[in-house]
Image 1 (cartoon, rainbow, N blue to C red):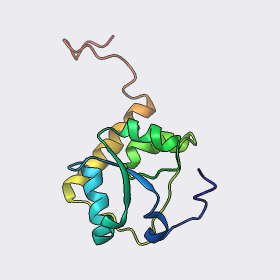
Image 2 (image 1 turned 90 degrees about the horizontal axis):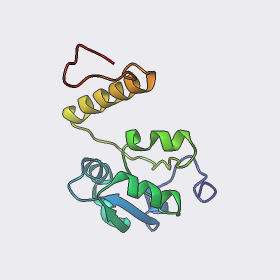
Image 3 (image 1 turned 60 degrees about the vertical axis):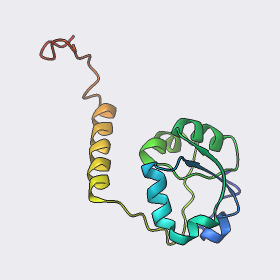
Length: 131
């Protein structure tokens, strides 16, 4: 509900009591979110924990729940107006070097697909022969 969350930025205290739907423990996205919030993570009203981004996005899209999943997973939904970003004031996103490299790689791959670079079919049995 964009009207409910119309500010540019929110303090965590303003959002903690909202219903949060998060990825399962062990998820990289959840680990980054937990690290970024530190001790304040325990203040969240975690309503539901799921293992798939698509399920989380569908529920959040149809409710007033909040989530934290990767931008790569939601960018198209944001562009289409299905989801929107709610910024948390003073949130520090910590990423390891490995996570930074992977994020850049996936962004690069996404750009290649969106540009049509890989839009032709590749013959998996003979990669040199394209159809």
